[in-house]
Length: 379
Ligand SMILES: Cc1ncc(COP(=O)(O)O)c(C=O)c1O
Image 1: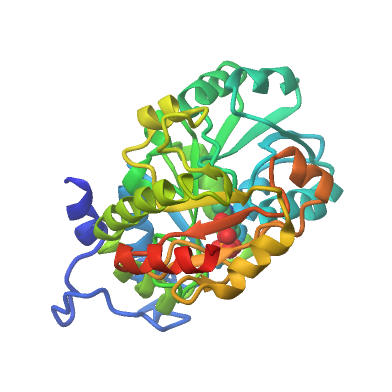
Image 2: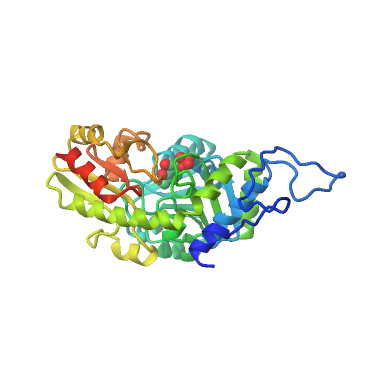
């Protein structure tokens, strides 16, 4: 099946009891067993629930993977990957990543004896300098949040294979519509389904997809043992959201391109970060591994004054000042005080997250309204 058909049909089928075309919300914790040890595939909803199961199969199909698992948040999905490691293991992670991912690595897993190296990955060859006999995981986010750097998944996967290291890719920004890391050689793909997969800013959820049976066994063991699962109502909402993922992504990409171009020619704007520009440092890699450039854009002001960013955030009327991204509505945020506040200033600035940086999640509204809004806010 092609992408749009999979988004609508993969993993779901009309309800056997009633013929309902939409997957029912199986709002139940347990399942009656006709006799001990006999059930219909479901025993307890932490272990598995039919609505969640349909969603897990759907997301796995979109990522061209065999095994999918959904969690109570994107961070719970990341938590599951990290729990596959042991004390003494080392992780190489991009240094330009979602602040919450940095926080869980540094403040939760470091104290259990896992060592993290946060490095620039724009040049994949640099990763090899940090590999040693304890390296077990490479953590990649591409495009990165919020600098929109592009990391070469094929080159990183080759390096990971050579050293027998697991490669996990956070595919939240690109979505499976624009990029499929497993096809490019990654072992695990991770999503904050809160964002584009759900698409309507009404759910917090995470997902993992993989092809390897051994990784899948660990993933399901940890999902069930740690219990950070998502509920049936949220599973239904994300299943419904995904049915229009391909249509929404087309419009996010179209609007994103127009806004990036508008900002690039604006006299007050210093730099625009968007992988679709030919002068983006890894534009050629983006073109190889992505099918479009998405609706996430960051930009900074000439003079780099924090007040310029804060004033703009106050003045917008269509863009909403809020955390998160990937919903139908356009959002605007200030990484330094919002999404990336948990990263120390020194680390932030190394990655280019300066005081005047603004991040946009361009929604699917009419482009004229979005540009007019930015124009009046930037005046
Ligand atoms: C790229 C990325 N990864 C992971 C997460 C964490 O996901 P959640 O907020 O669903 O826990 C986020 C949240 O903003 C994100 O932007």
